[in-house]
Structure formats: C-alpha cells, structure tokens
Image 1 (cartoon, one colour):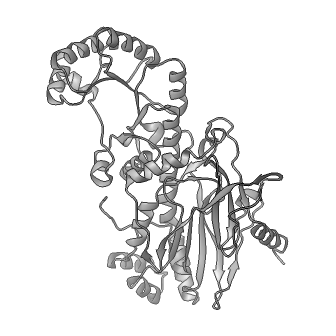
Image 2: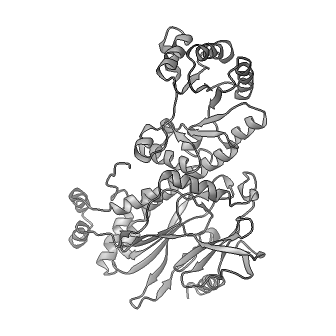
Image 3: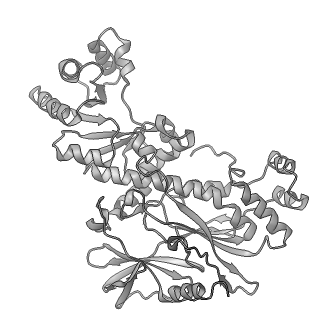
Length: 477
C-alpha cells in the first residue's frame, strides 16, 4: 500500500471560502447530494474506464486538519475562529456510492455520489476530481492501447515522462487496470503489487568496451530472463548478431531483444527471420518508441513481428487527449423531514445542463449473449423492472429508441462510505484488472472500435426526464 500523505489542503481555495460561508450562515450540516460525472469520452472513443476509486477512498479516510493547516488558514485573515475550531475537530460523516474501478463508463452517468453535510460534501470536490479524472483518463488510454495490441502484451514505460511523481505512480496503477501487464515504475510493485518490468538502457551497452561484452555480462547477471537492447549501434549488423551469439553461449531460460528506434516493422520482420534461422524461435521481440494505439495498429497491419510493446509518454500523459473532464455538481438538498429537493444547473451550453435529484444508474445486459445493451439513470426511489419489454431512448436524439427484452439489470454504483465509515472492501489490483477485462468483453464490437464508435445508449427514466423538463421550463420563475 502506498504511503499516505496529508492531502486535506490539496483543494481549490474557494472550497474553503464556501465552507466558511456555510458555517457562518448556519447551513454547514444541511444534507446535500453531489454527483461526479463526465461529459465526453477522450479520443472520441465509445466508452471510458472507471479508475481512481481506491485513491479517492484513502483521501476521504485521511481528511484531517493539522495545526499547521489551521495556522495557515488563520494567516489569511478571512476565516472565522468558529470555523477554524470546527476544522480542528473535523470528522468525516458522508455517505458515498461509486461505480467500481474497471467498469466501462459513459458520459452523463453518476460515477460517484456523495451525500452528507453541505460543508463536508462541498469540500471533497477537488480531491475526488483529481483522483477520478486522472486515473480514469489513463486507464481509458491504456485500454485503447492494449486493445490495439490484439493479444500482444503492453508494458507501461512512462514514469520519466509523467507530469510529476504522483502522476507516474497513480498513472502506472491506472494503466495496469486498463490492461498493461506491468510497469517500469519500481515502487508500483512494492505499493500495489503491479509487476515491475525492464531490461537495460543504451548506457549499459555503452558502458562496456564492446556490445558483445555488455550483452554477455547482462546474460550472466540475469540468466532467468534476459532481454537485450539491440539498437545502440546497428540492429542488424551488430546488435542482433551479438545477441544471438550471447544467447547460444549463455543459454538464458528466457530470452528477448528490444528495438527502440528505426523502422520497427522492417526491423522486427528481419529480426524474426534471423532469430528463427538461428534456431531461436522462442526469443521474443519487444518494441518501444513513442507508441500509441494508432501506431500499434499500423505496425501490426504491416506484418510487424512484435510480441510485446513498451509504451511511455503517449500513455502516461494521454497525449492525444489529456483531459478527462469529470465534474462535481450539486444534484439535491435534503429537507429536515427527509424530503429530497432536486437541484439543476442550467446553461446555454446544453452539455452543461445537469440531471437533478438523487439518482441511481443501471446497466441492462442481454440474457443470451451477456452483452451490455444500454444504461438507465433513474431517481433513487424508482422501481426498475427486471423483466418485460423496456424501451430505452437516446436522450440526444429522443426519436431514436430501442426496445429491450430478455435482459438482466445491474445497479452500477455500490456503497463505499456510510456515515463516514468505510463499508466497501477495496479489491486487489489484479482483481480490478481482471474485472475490467471481463466488463470490456460485455461491450459490442461497434462500441469498442476506435473510429466512429457506436454511441451507447444512456437514457433517463421517464420520471427523471419529466422532473428535468419541468425544472427547465420553470427556471427563473
């Protein structure tokens, strides 16, 4: 488990000014409901992958204001002493529901719902978005890259290109959820159990008097798994011949070569033929060099003989579309008698209009194939039928609809915290990765494709749609 650090003040300053305001106005304990959702899938893909929940849980568990935090806030000269004393004795009391990590997710649906005292629920906004936005972004990118590799393994090699130490560690974790077999980040095996992988840099080869000597020494040090970097000088003229010589002399249990530059399709084809002619059919070929899902697809379509890909900067930074865009919005308040009062945010930008109320999200699966058919967002007190014909509309195009029959229904959010106490057993990272793989297999190929994917249906229940329409029609009155 990664060492915990105090992230309490890792927040937007306005969360603190609003919290002070709630305290001073006497509404700090008013029960409020907030949703995290996102508006569009990165890279114009068909779906995203939920990730970052474990880190979010740790941050909520560790919410505590130290004396140095209190003194810093006092130095600003704008916070009341009563508010500072409240923070000194802060106790987390919220209820939280969330979609488990590894689940395919779609725009508009609540990934996480927080219910609790207004001051606390509001204050969580920044840190929860940091966790969910970053890891969901990287897990989604990893999923695309792994699917492009079509069964070939993908290793995350991006630590040195990550946007800081936390991004390297949490990004590697998210990449593993998305399907990578391991990471170059050594601390991730210690902290999360994610396999740490790697071979050598060009500097190892340059450190010795000859390439042959460098390879020999490495094979002697690591006889059980020896992968040699063959492009320091010339792949076909020196690197590959020296590697073959060393493999035959040292006879490592597992052997491989890595190519990090040049025309990877051409070089891998030539290398495969030379290795096979030398009787080294079991020697794998690893390639690395600014890969993403599209370049991987291209080299595979060109017949590249690559068994494994090392992917760095374009994965760990999600270079092609580096913002996930999740938001945290107030959805409802609770009256003293327990009545839930829905709230809506209205904008001239239709995509920014929120769905009001305390909601639940459901996924429909075909009983025969197990494939996901559609998602439904409903109000919390609705009864969702588990059988019989069900008509699902596309909210962006209400004239488009599909009728479901012979289905099963699953509620996606699960309880995480109850009254501030953790009630969810955090799964092992390997379990999350396996779950992610299984859930991706429930999606139709049309949703999985990279270019112009089929738009998966995420509908609003009739009751929720009627409520939303009424609130829109009566806004400003």
